[in-house]
Amino acid sequence: MDINIIFKIAAVGLITAILNQLLKKADKDEIATLVTLAGLVIVLIMIINMIGQLFDTLRAVFGAF
Amino acid sequence: MEIFRIAAIALVTAFCVIILRDVKSELAMLVAFAGGIIVLLSVIDYFSDIFSVVANIAKRAGVAASVVTLLFKVIAVGYVAEFSASLIDDAGLPSLADKVTLGGKLIIVAVSLPVVVELFEYIARLLS
Image (cartoon, rainbow over all chains, first blue to last red; front, side, top):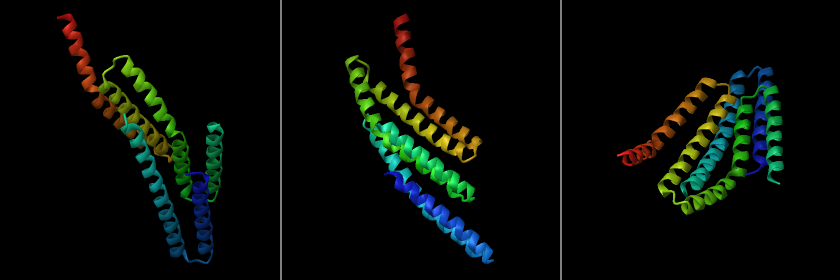
């Protein structure tokens, strides 16, 4: 659990944004929205895993008392 | 020192959020979420140290164990409520953040009612 997760998410964000622009210029708008959605889903899954880990740790720490 | 690590992570997260906002990506807010979670996870083990010390002191002072566990439960609820409320506020939804805070307060009051009742009974017994 370190800084590389932030870089991973930022990278996914950048790539999806750039692909979005590219696809818009090549007037393939529907694919652009699909790419954005795909990036969003990937990042959401990562975030949800992290939130799950955080709440498990919280329960472990607070549950013990 | 731990504080430098936290500061570094927070600064990098802020930097990434600025870049992503500039590129108009929706993931900027999610990077902020991730940064917040990482900082929390890095300091979470201090909690258990603090709690073990407090629990020992409370035991030596003769405080009932139930009160101490209740105290920690209230701290946990407050901590989680404040964490999510501030994240939601960052995402630009202050009304939702207020509702989360309200929910947290209600839970805390509901959880701490038995102790209040116990206190009143104790006082009543003293006066009678």
